[in-house]
Structure formats: C-alpha cells, structure tokens
Length: 76
Image 1: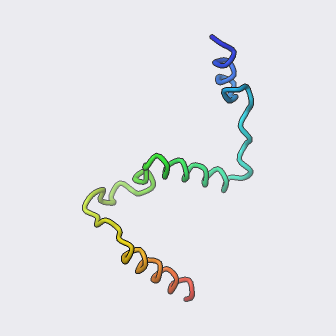
Image 2: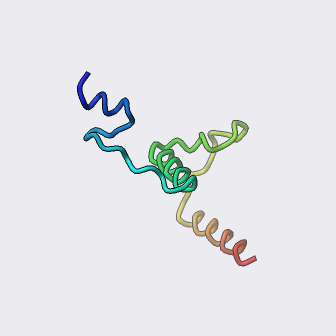
Image 3: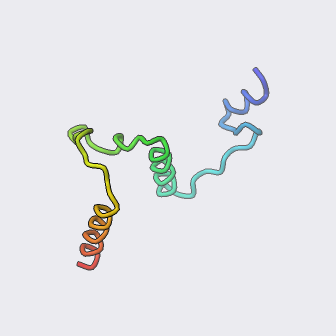
C-alpha cells in the first residue's frame, strides 16, 4: 500500500491534506445537493410515489411562467 493509499484511508486527500470541514450543517447540505445535481441524481430528492417519467421538457416560456408564479407568491 502506498503512502497515498494510507492517506486516503485516514480521510486525507491525494496530496496528504485533509479537505476543510463544512462550516455548518447548512453548508454540508448545500454541498450534498450540489453533488446530486452534478451527478444528475435528482430523483433521490423526491419521494417514491412521485412519477419518474411523463414530464414535458421545460421551455423558456414555461420557466418564465414558473418564475412569475414564484415571484407572486413571494410578494404575497
């Protein structure tokens, strides 16, 4: 086993340095969400009863409608 492998077993990075810990649970959740989005693993975030197929492709017009609706809700 090389020194690099030993370092990985201790939770250290490839160059023997530990990655900085998340500043807070919110940062950790944000990092997890970003990793899921990057991996295109959105379905892990939805309950099992949510259908996984049959959705329309979002268009710029649809996204503008969604944004408008959300803004209306924010303004109350």
